[in-house]
Length: 194
Image 1: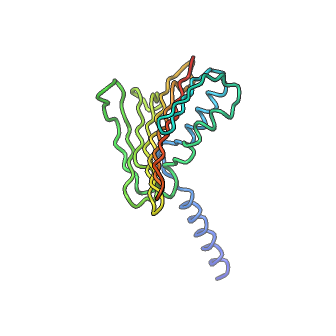
Image 2: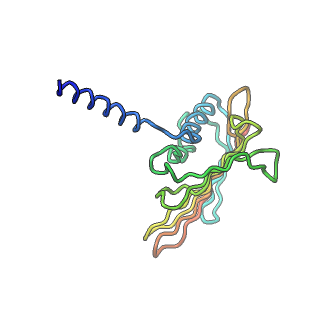
Image 3: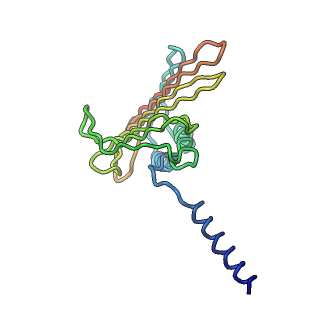
């Protein structure tokens, strides 16, 4: 009888720990947004103007996109920014429905407290009345260790066309300083030519 009671207790306790492990925050799914945008953009074949600036040297080119991997590559940074990861759980502060001074949009702003060991500093989601009507995402990342110090600003401007959320333009600005080397600054801009 004791064996049956012990076995029952082990089963109940193990099922409880599985439930605790599966508990997940319901913060905005940024990696999921990246996948959705890459799929939405890959289903169309827009031309883009891509400008790359490295230490004040500018290169610009118009590209006809026929490769589905283009958008996955350009949006790959979003896969690294997971507000639902255990690394940032408990460190996130959300300010909702902030009125934007420069437009009719509302902003949900995520900030991370120190101690999260995450490069995420701030994420701002700009939207019309409903967060599903996303119009811009702005992300600030900062990494620092004994050798390297870097900061990244990512802005993606969006619009809804024929019920699909699509990219109008994207700007990634990066600054990196490695000890005993000159700083390196680059900027990647993409403007979709609909």
